[in-house]
Image (tube, rainbow over all chains, first blue to last red; front, side, top):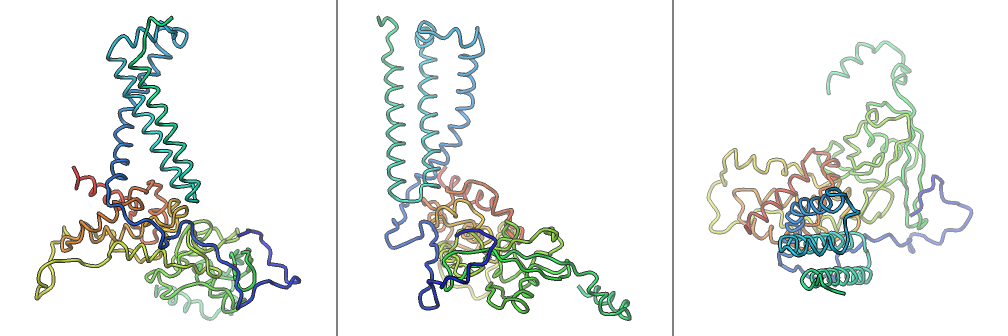
Length: 156
Length: 257
């Protein structure tokens, strides 16, 4: 619908009349017979809960990570292969980075899934965007986990 | 409400233009749509001389009765109880019958349009079917088991207080049609349906709470709520809608853990 502050031009003969009304704008994603039935799973609830809990943990993990990497001990200039190798020699930092990787990726992916559900109107758009999102998130998690566990400081 | 008439009687000897003195000129900018004439909607301005203490609905009546009889809008009781005349006034969902003209800056044009997220059928009239479908889905009636008692079902004042806020709903759709999630996804139940489910879930006499929670636990249920608080701002009855939705969420979580 346009939003001009004018009345429609009366000189042109209208294409619509009582027997042939203009099409009205349907509500997006109205419920039809093809709409999937209720799932009766708790997926959405666990998703919602995960966002809250992972958010709390991520505040500590990410802020701590940024502090260590960018502020303490000379800031960003200290980061090099040796620095990373030294940190990952300790299982504590391995676990820190692993948990941060998983929580951040899943938290972000779930947030984007919500946004796609909200704003991608057509079923096909939604399918493709979500497919892309899940592929990217899965790839990030797999690659990151692989690196953390198979990291070899003596690589040459 | 009776005092103004008494005051007017004191001033009665004054001529008729004394009453005209406290009317002001207000521009109503109304979004018109008639599918039998054009596919596009357009804004139409109406100049009215009206008492600023009158309501927007009185202005719409004036337009319909004296200026343009084709203006179409819903209203039944015209006193804020039936919930027929929810519309978007100056960009906010309100009941036209509860909005005084003096409260919404009559110096500027007052924009009036249909509520969003529902199909506009004509001018300010929308198709309320999806809204009431969501309402029906949450089973807004008393569900009990066993024999019917011979006398009324009693409950304590505290038990009644638990869901008092959500009994005030008049199903005007101001909250649901202010919800950005509902604008984008007509399958979301919407605040009004959740409020009316809340009214029965937290009623100590009702035994269908588990079923209703199961319905609202679904994809299109309470978890789609983004706590935008648009619904709480829009509710003409002052129901804390977002709080009610959060209470349903909490009930769903405490049911599991």
